[in-house]
Length: 219
Image (cartoon, rainbow, N blue to C red; front, side, top):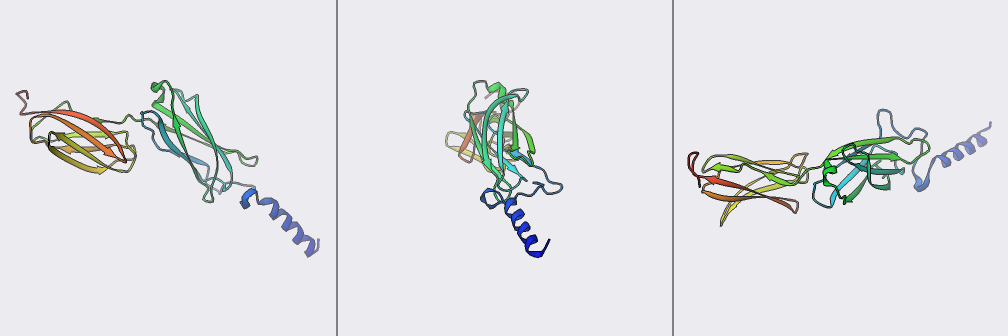
């Protein structure tokens, strides 16, 4: 084969390897040691159940199908979306679900599948569902420290916990962990019933604690 024929063949092969949108489509869609991955934000059990799923480490330009299953065995179909992976091999899709049986929302299973003849790789993840609320002791004592835990909030975000009784305010600030939880320490100065309000990213929850004078008397 002469040089002119060789150049023509290479040009033809190169053009065929470039798919729709100009993305390169090699025979092996994934780099060595890398496989399709899917992660998801943990949804909170308040309707609708909103969360996002991110597919990564895929072939740029490939179409993926993201399916959500629910139920104790993770086998009931809930929702499905298709999306195109970006230049970085990633795409994020959002879901907002309304199912009738909240008890089945303890765990969600999310599956991502590449819709490709050359590499139909798939990835799965399981995410927990958290109830937004405040966990605090029913009773505590004046000038003695106790803990209050907020859960079901956006992960890794600033959060404030404020104890309120009348015009009095005691505030603790921090950052939620990867599961959307934060524990604050309180020492309250006055006997009576206090509300504890957690606020983060426009979301809130309220709990209560009864502060007593000491361990031997009632308030």
